[in-house]
Image 1 (cartoon, rainbow, N blue to C red):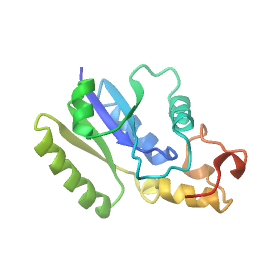
Image 2 (tube, rainbow, N blue to C red; image 1 turned 45 degrees about the horizontal axis):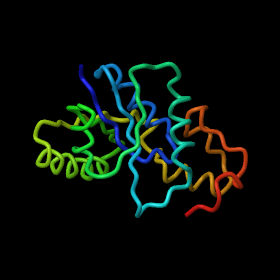
Image 3 (cartoon, one colour; image 1 turned 180 degrees about the horizontal axis):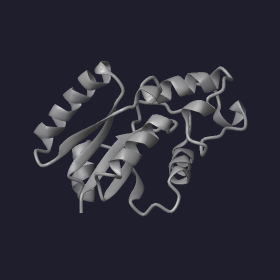
Image 4 (cartoon, rainbow, N blue to C red; image 1 turned 180 degrees about the vertical axis):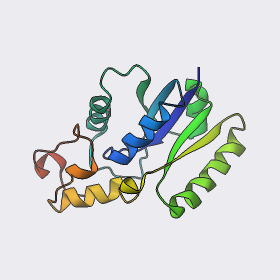
Length: 161
């Protein structure tokens, strides 16, 4: 069974993430969407809400699992039996950044390969950071995220950190 780990914060999940996961499902038997816990990073949305949005984006899909993890990504890959790390690339800047991480991961876990999926042009400008800014400013964020991501008010979210 080919298992890929798709790590990220998914704060919130975007249409770009959905595209990477959907294309990844054409390659892999199972994708574990791994929400990284980073104590140095403050998130806008709580982890349970992020998990719900991901689950609701892929209802009844047995090829997808959602997990939380901390520590090294390659260590978590070993824990779950993943031989691949799935990453999306929006632009050349993403490539430079992701290439460095992929090389480090290869040194730490030689048996694990990183697979890159290029974003279609319509998703190349979408990032969770931009979506959080749009939400904080009260703008229409809905065009950037799956229909599972809906926020009734900023009171639910709190101030943007």
